Length: 401
Image (cartoon, rainbow, N blue to C red; front, side, top):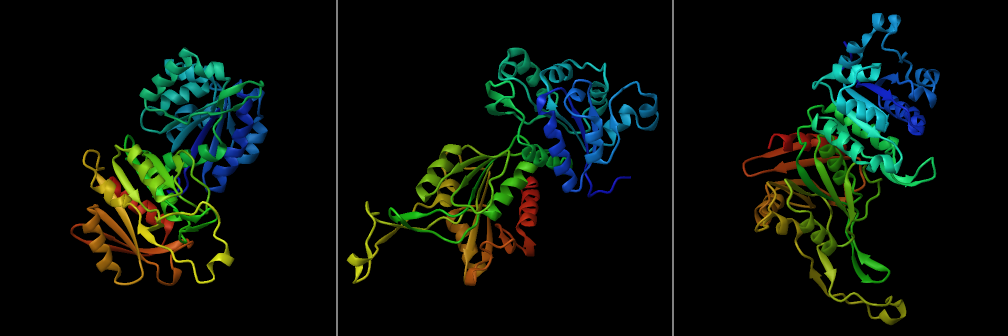
């Protein structure tokens, strides 16, 4: 029996110059505690060696469906059934065509059919742009997608052949994250759902070099976007300034100001859920200056007239035609935490409010937090959790909403 905390990944490598990137993927998966077994097709063996794969995975490499030794000790049925997720990366145009038609004349094809519908299957294509755009390839992709295969789309760039376009294997970091998510959440309970998440700090200009903002790092919002994506949701992340890398597999839009974030949020509707994590500036300078305010001209002080910014959370929660089924707000308070959070939930007309105490700068830029979730009937407290744990617990709560 494999330990529950150790995902088992079966990596199938087909013929593509991008096959060398499979070595990076093995290293990244192993660093996350996964066990990786490799299947190398004959064409894949033209680009990487079994010895390299075995050295990095610390597991035997399987190549021949008719190997007496391999079939006796493991067999293609066991290879398929003992995996938490099966990954074809890189997947050539030929391999995708074989999958679409159900060919099983080699070990990789036999494993694909033996997996059935009980094991998540993931394909990361890599090929020349003309091959990618060919109608036959697109038909084959549509077929395997309808059969339940998860596609990690290739990126745009310069190919090994010198041509430029869509066809480059997705970044190994993206493939690593997407595959681990499938291993942990094979049923993808939020697949087909669409969520808008806001994160980070917005700013409002005073003059061309100064602005009003806050200490938000974006860690909690990005963690929530990750957790929703891991459960299969389509996620649109609207972010101000953030201090950590943006996530893979998520549509990200930089929205530096309150007005930009509100406009992008409205444009992203309709959606199944809206989660307003961003620390949005509540005030703006009524008339931002065209030129920098010089200190010499403000000896008597710079008197600022601030006006309220638009209320993004209330606007989405009270949208007349496309109000998401679930709207969640965040409340950062320094006093009367639950009282203010309860009043905010009612005034904004959102479904849940997640409150935390930021007195003295607490929570901002930290990896841990304490939150209180308020809905119409209860208050639930999560004490001293990592922001990743909060994100995953919240995503599980959303699944059952």
